[in-house]
Every structure is written in C-alpha cells, then in structure tokens.
Amino acid sequence: MKKIFSLLLIAGIVSFVACGPSAKEKAEAAKQDSIRKADSIAKETAKADSIAKFEKIKQDSAAKADSIAKAATTKKVTKKEGKKEKVIKKENVKAGQGKMH
Image (tube, rainbow, N blue to C red):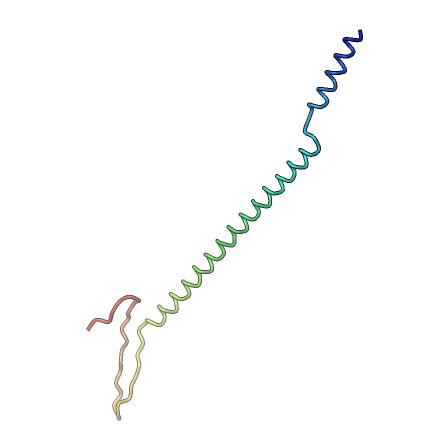
C-alpha cells in the first residue's frame, strides 16, 4: 500500500510540474509578444509614411506639370515698334521640344 501511495504521489507531483510553463517563461513569452506587436506597428507606420510621402511627391510633380503646360500654351503678344503694332504668336511647345524654324 505504501508503494502504491508513493507511486501515485510521485506521479501527481510530476504531472503537476509538467502541466505548464513557469511564471518566468510566461513573462518572457509576454515580453516577446509585445516586442513583435511593437515591431509590427512600427513597420506599418513606416509603410504608411512612405506611401504618404510618395503621394505628396506625385501631387507636387503633377502640379508642376500643369503649371508648365499652362505656361507653354499659345498666347498673342503685341509689341509696339514705332507706330506699328506687331503681333507675335508664341508656338505651342512642349517640354523637351525645341522650336523649329
């Protein structure tokens, strides 16, 4: 009877100890989880910032292209030479094109 009781007691202690992680292991796991979450948030924030910067650059370049296009439109300019007025017509020239004679 003593042997059976001793075996049951030892089996109970072993199963109790083997049931789960210790408090130290749980604390370490929680720490690692919080580090992973912080890294994930930092990566998402960096990605959102990069996308926002790209969109701003894209909008700025589109605005510059619009202003260049407006400046290159056809205009009539009058120039006085003595008593005669000379009408000068500016050609529609796009960026990168030279004026052909």
